Image 1 (cartoon, rainbow, N blue to C red):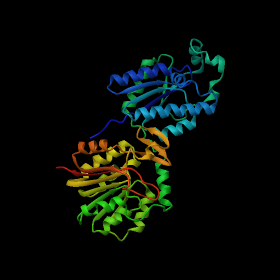
Image 2 (cartoon, rainbow, N blue to C red):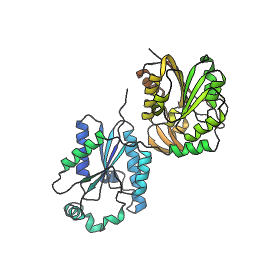
Image 3 (cartoon, rainbow, N blue to C red):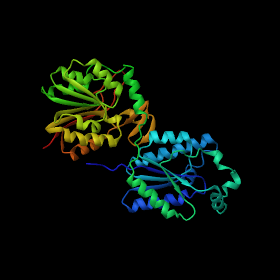
Image 4 (tube, rainbow, N blue to C red):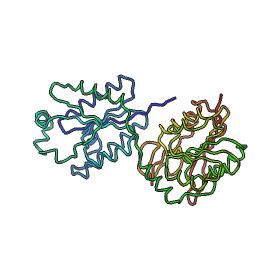
Length: 382
C-alpha cells in the first residue's frame, strides 16, 4: 500500500531563459496527468511579499530560502509545486537538498546573446544590471539541464521536464538527522533505564515473545524486554547506536541490526509477535512511517501487535523552531509531530485494529521535558 508524496520542481536559469513560460507549461502538463499542482513565479512572489528584500547577495539568499520554505510547506500538503525562480546560490542549494524532500532542480540553458535579445523586448534587465553571471552561482550539478533555444520550443522543454519528474526517483531530504543521531549516541548521553512506555506495556507481553523494536537507540527498552524472557531484535538507522547496543548487551537474547526496516526486512526471521516503536515516528518523515507500517503488516503474525509512542501535534514543541511543513519543524533537530487520527487511519488501512489510543502529557517525562505524546496499540488482523 502506498501514499503519494509530491515534490518541488525548481526551474532556474538566468533572466531571459524562459523560466516562467516553461514553468507554467510543466504545471499544466502534470495537472492534466492527474497530479495536484501549484505554480509559483519568483517575480510574483517578490511582489506579493511587498519587496521587503533588497538585491544584495544576502537579501537574495534569504528571499530564496523563503521561497523554498513556502514550497516545502505546500508540497507537504499533497501538491507538486513548480517554481520558476533564479535563486542560484550554492548555500541555497545545500539548504534545499537537505531540507526539502523530492526536489528536482532544472537548469534552462540559453546562450547570453539569446537571453539579451529576449530581455530587450521585456524587462531590459541586462541594460540596467549588466553581467548577471556575477550575481549568481550557476549550477554545477543540477538534476536536469535542458536547452531552451534554437529549434527547441517551450512545449518540447516542458514535455521533457514533466516526463523526467514522473520517471526519476528523487533523493529524499535528510534534515541533518544522520549527523545529529550519530553524535547523540556517540557521546553516551541517552538514558539507560527502561522508558515509561516500555514499563507501561510490559504486562501486556506474556513471554516468550519475538519482539521487533524499530529505532532501538541505545537498547535500553530492548534490554528490558529481553530481561523479561522475550527474544528481541532491535534495529536503528544510527550506526553509533547499534555499535553501543552490541557492546552493552552481548549476553542477552537479543540481536541488533543497523538500518531501516524496509532495508532489513529480508534479513529478519518472520513472523514477529510484537513490533515496538518509541519516539521514532516523529523522527522520520511521513513516507518513512508509511514504509515502516507497510513492512509491519507483513512481518507480524495475525494477532500480533504494534505499540507506538511519538510526540503529538499538540506538543508545545510543535510550534518551535524552523518550519518545514504543517507538521514538521527543526528545533535542535528534525521532528514530525503526529496527528493521532491520521496515524490510526494509516494503521486501519493496513489491516490493524486499534485496541487503545491515548494522547496526553505526563506519560513521557524526562528531566524538565513533559511532552504531549500519542500512544497507540493495534492488533494485526488475519
